[in-house]
Length: 230
Image (cartoon, rainbow, N blue to C red; front, top):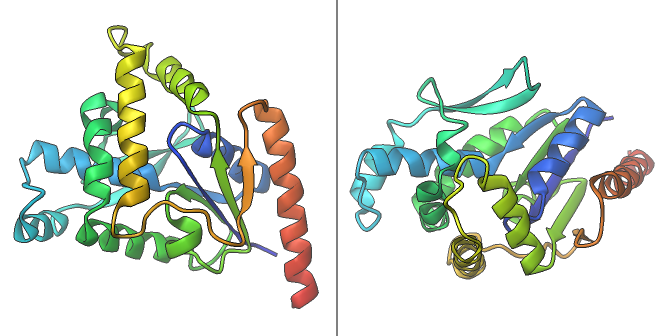
């Protein structure tokens, strides 16, 4: 019996890490919606698309093709933009500084959500993002909302970026996360919020192993509930 697992939450809470581990444990597909929005942002930056002109945005979206491919070495899914592997490019700070603004655009969200819903048609899917449990899959069998102490999130994000960007500072990372939190939570289209039936996972003081164990327990309960209703 396959289900859909929707994981939402703030930036740098470990959503992707948990989603990947759950997908691997359950042999489910994993979809990183954040990578999709980052790839769209990268395309907009490269093509100098004005975020204030609806016509430019709609025209640009027609030229964007997104898909994931499995990297046989890392066993992870990597983002492709128009057949180009952009897995590294989309992690640049220039993209991080713009992605929340791009993701707040109605036309962009409709474009991405339509693709995401098609991916979940046959269940057996773990998807993480900002509006998965509220907009993309409101009927998902398991919804998880992740959070963590803001300063812990800053340190995690800094440690992630430092190896490829040793000039970055904690203040830059803190400003970026604060800005993204505000935009994600206050945008008009599909704002970040916890679904009423989402389980809250605060991993401020949890190890990866502990959070995975807890999430797998919730998965078992969700599947049991679905079985009882079948």
